[in-house]
Amino acid sequence: MLGSAEIGTLITALGTGIGRGEADQGGFDISKLRYHRIVIMTDADVDGSHIRTLLLTFFFRQMPELIEKGYLYIAQPPLYRAKRGNEERYLKDDAALEQYLLDKALGNAALTLGSGRVLEGADLLAEINFMRDASRVIGRLSSRIPLWVVEQAAIAGIFNTDRDAALVQVPELQRRLDAASRESERGWKISLNDSGLEMGRSVRGIGETYRMEASTLAGNDARWLAANLERFVSDYSNGIHLRLDAGTEVTVAGPAEAFARLLAQGRKGLAINRFKGLGEMNDEQLWDTTLDPATRTLLQVRVEDTEEAGAVFSTLMGDVVEPRRDFIVGNALKVANLDV
Image 1 (tube, one colour):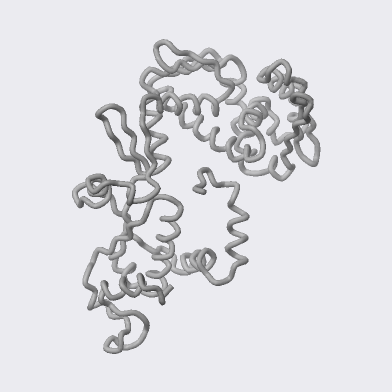
Image 2: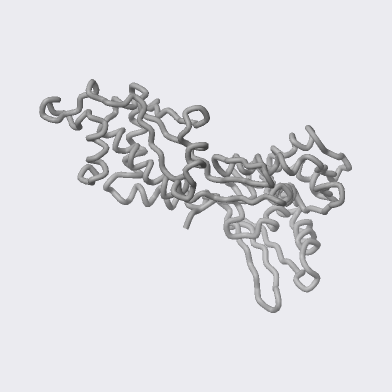
């Protein structure tokens, strides 16, 4: 990395030199620093994140004093632009986009729960937090199983930590899956035992089987579903209706589907652009979103625990492949959005 022309240009521009030698021999000398606000500005996608990590590794390993004195910053270019008519909004990341879409959708929305309680306004906004959490937990468990199948398993009580109680609910899950399937695709068979959960059916003569290992059923996400079982049953087990606007009401099968419907409603009429790179912005957009000192957002880089930070950089950016491979394998299924 130190041999690259770009890093050489960066060192020259900063004026500090590098290394532990004497300053008059090119060693690092912070008193010669030309700038006291050094901003890392990379694309908002995965490639940009990798380049940013490389630069952070460089500064952490070679110029830690810049971080200690608070001179290093990270720019926050937006990942999205949402436009409807003359209204335009730049959104930093997926979380900001999600909240923007929900704000757009909630104006005329109302949710009728299985208990008959109708939520709108502030009450619906409070329920959104549960719907969001449920959607993410169910989504993580759905890496190899359709989301709606996992959602129905949660509502049926299959994730109950009391195994006997969960076994009693197997017929209920079968009933719910059949009710949610086309008539020609019903006939679900469910098995729950010490090795895990197996759900299968035949679709146009082809067997379709989904399996969840016992370790997954004992994991944190499954325990979260079990802890919220009473809420799933009381609010989402029967006849949930979602009013999206004055003339549109739909039946939804659970909190994850309701959340997805609200996001889809918020997208209506919007043109959403995802910026893969800063080069996709014109000059005015780049200035307005990332460069203008009056409006830009900068993150100051700080290191709270030097040893822990060093271990992370060694894992992700070191010469030894095994720790990096183990990290990737261990976290691959947690990825929500992947740039390919």
